[in-house]
Length: 45
Ligand SMILES: [Zn+2]
Image (cartoon, rainbow, N blue to C red; front, side, top):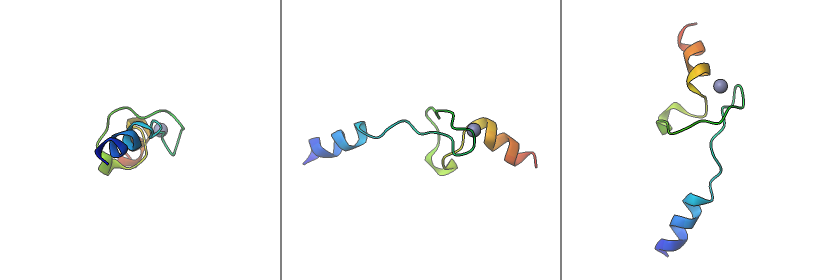
């Protein structure tokens, strides 16, 4: 059972930014699915 869970996490594809489609590296999950660039744009609005 534990192995199945680990395999599940391994099989998750890399996150991609919903705005520009750029692959998102290690990030805080709470920031959703946007890269730093797009998050910066949002914050500067
Ligand atoms: Zn982006």
